[in-house]
Length: 274
Image (cartoon, rainbow, N blue to C red; front, side, top):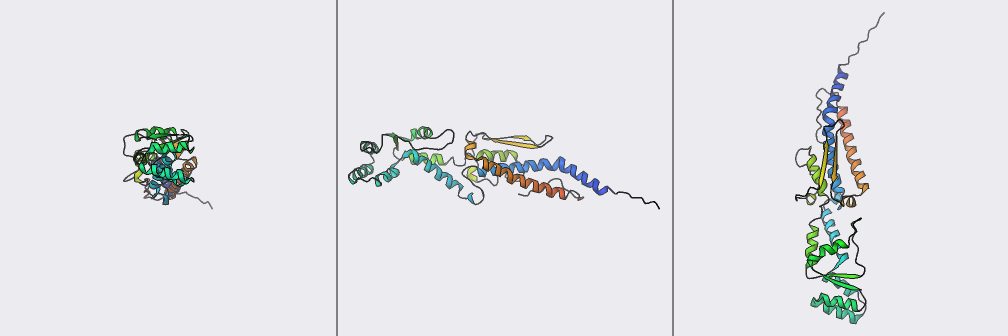
């Protein structure tokens, strides 16, 4: 007795057709969508960190860091008061307090110098704060150090005004990645969502750039922050973590789509799942 077996490949053919749709249409969409997510992760992992529960207080942390940074370099009436309060010699302490209350910064600097508390002092007006601040920062690490030999005393309310000016730039480094997210797009609505508002710079400086290779044989998007200090405020460990998180999301969504590739109503355009 002869037995004939006929293979019905119609369902398999449907899977292969859907796989081709997945390869040609879905992968570029996934790459673009998850490249945007990577830009969001990089923005939030740049200092000040705004990942998860840290997002609400990130701006304040950044502003506090600016304030601490500047008080390492400059003295104003408030920080000078701290020096006076720690003075052990009561006679010198009273003399310093009287001079501080009078607002005579030059005289208080001369007293500090005469009693050997400092080597030199310099009065700095607002116009000179930026340059002096820059001179006390490491070009390699971006860290600020306190002057060793000279006390820099800011005049009037100059330090307060300069501090507020610098604090306005908190989030500037994050904005390069926000720009990348905006250029990448690929989602309905605002492509920079997920990034705190203070990190979305509204200036006309091009800080973030992308190379869009979505139409290439192996779709890709390359993004870059052109800020020279970007690597100083975004540790390699955080970059790796961002890549890991986004890669896992992309694989999970791709696997989900492949699992449903045999369905006759298969849609190669993935629904947004973030």
